Image 1: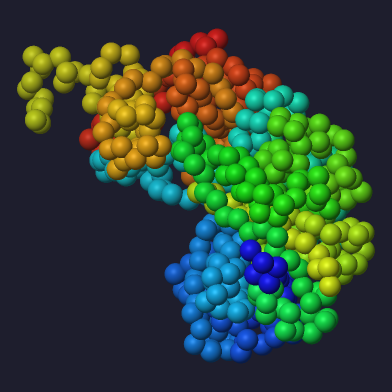
Image 2 (image 1 turned 90 degrees about the vertical axis):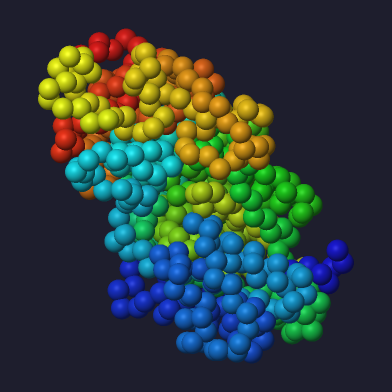
Length: 403
Length: 150
């Protein structure tokens, strides 16, 4: 692939994450879109393809709803849904369209209204006693199984994923997981777009409301509202744009989406490890870099227990070495591989379809040297990771422009 | 076939009717146990109704029993669940001689002092409620092998 075939993020934006009671999903998507276009110095007239996601209304066609507010130019729209990896999937879709030559510029948008959504994943068949027990569904169940055969709740599923890592490699504890949360909440105090910017002591985190052991409330991602959008283009197109646009553009050195390959137990407890490891390995190959070259990482810390396993899955440490990696101080913002300097999903918030793009925005912000108080000095290369249960994993490696 | 109250000669009518919570729990063939659909081609095991094998794409399966004893591979203590689900409870994954099973850990205190990864557990069953005909649904869980079954 020649240099001119490279893919670049020309403009990108995220809204403030939090409670937006006065605005709906289309309002938030329109805000992120308008700001991403302005950031890239382009308009809807320049965009040849739109990929958009809004999981809570996946059938509503958020892409077309957005077009009606920001510009109906007749371009193809792909409404995408891939659980919490929806935003990264939208970006990946726009990138594929641009890379194939079908469009010169693409727009990816993710938006969610999730404030007050409560516990995710605990739905399913209600437990009302039936007139007659009648087996139904793929397990021939006579009544709801959530709570009777394990748990469907996200805090519970990801708690087991962290505890399993501890079983395999040792060294984990309630306190260790709480310390990961302490780091991310400390980082969030520097991020004005985070839903929560509150520092917690370790004692406060461990003493807070237990949701699903070992995850207490501050160790869980925050449901909130928000949107993020990005404009992507080719290296050839970028060369025709202004020096300022070329200087601020961020190179997409790798863009990878994976699902989980079958392994024993993967249909019993979601395996978020193998597909992340596969995505990371492919991404490092595509980018021609290694994990030691990363100046910062935004990874999918939907729960404190999840962050630990992804240190290992993203190859930030030797296999089995995630606890040592954390204890060394490496993932703190002044460490060797800063992780989630945005505050992560635990404090920045997790408006699910926006999350994958917001992680990329955070990395771009640092690579452009525009991150203000939380700037990682001299950042040149960063990685953004997101997981959607089911499962899908998006990994993007981003590089600062040499221009 | 429907039984009537006059079928007193048949011993089965004196025992209360029961039905397993899920179709992979077998109650009427010796000791209660779980069964899995095993791919005849690659040996991958599944608990749900199958269209094909996720591992090798074959479509022939055989039903195999799952070991009743195993070790707890991971767990969580669920303190918040959907409305109507009693908490706290222990959810986990049990390694039953190489076959992973999703289940609750029962007959033990739901606190981290009593539950550890790697602990040996065994299958146990219990009634979870009757329908309008008096048929009892039977659930399952795993208890520490040291636990006293009531």
